[in-house]
Length: 181
Ligand SMILES: [Zn+2]
Image (cartoon, rainbow, N blue to C red):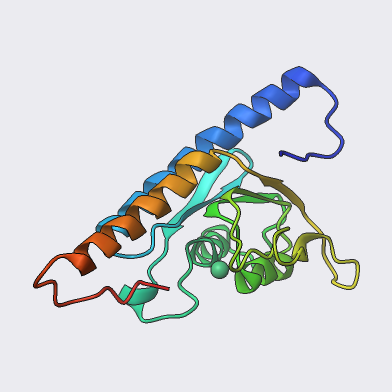
């Protein structure tokens, strides 16, 4: 599942895989924060030189903002923190495969790499429906690693939507969440 170029050393690969899981676990914490706010639970972290420079979760409903996706917010925050629009040297970790908008921001921000957990059959733009990371017509390409903590990332989404459906079926449940896609 994981595809990484230019790293033949198995020890280095194992270390990198452990780091990927460590940062994805932080992205999962962010996803849980989103769920607690009744937002679709997606979380993201931006890491630069081994340091977490930004973390965010989906806030589309609360912010009433169609761009308030976890990884989009994390990248904007990372740029502010670092004082530069170029996120060269940064890796974006996100629990769900980025959409076209967020993958497009990764191109524009010149990120080095994106690591995501679960693929998104309804909108994934880093391999599933499109692959924005390796389109030679665009002016930047970046590395992608998929499937990191995939089961955990998918489970948090599944349980969120299962709870929504259960709440809808309950007699007297008046409100349906705006977070439904
Ligand atoms: Zn997005």
